Length: 127
Image 1 (tube, helix red, strand yellow):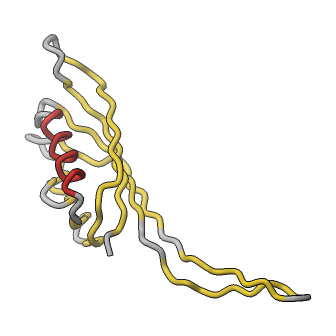
Image 2 (cartoon, rainbow, N blue to C red; image 1 turned 180 degrees about the vertical axis):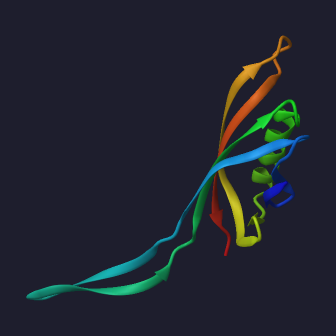
Image 3 (cartoon, rainbow, N blue to C red; image 1 turned 90 degrees about the horizontal axis):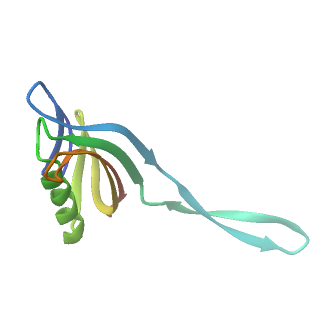
């Protein structure tokens, strides 16, 4: 069952495949300029909405995929610096670029290959 995608990288969970997201956080903010007033309170001026940021974590498990290859796919997309469409469920959240990726190898086989890689990705809205 597909639960989402960042560009061509699908996040899904089924009996045959696990390439899943555990948690997603989306942050939105608005910026204001503060103008000092002589003998009075400052005044705020809306400068508008800032770019959204999203962070999510998940795991790649070797029973269902090749964790190191999946990490290389994320890194390749980050290196391109091109916007990727983020889709979760039936909702398209917009275009984003990858700002950072971190990974933790949880289990390694006898040849030194990761069996489970947990990852965290930070992305920023591309506008």
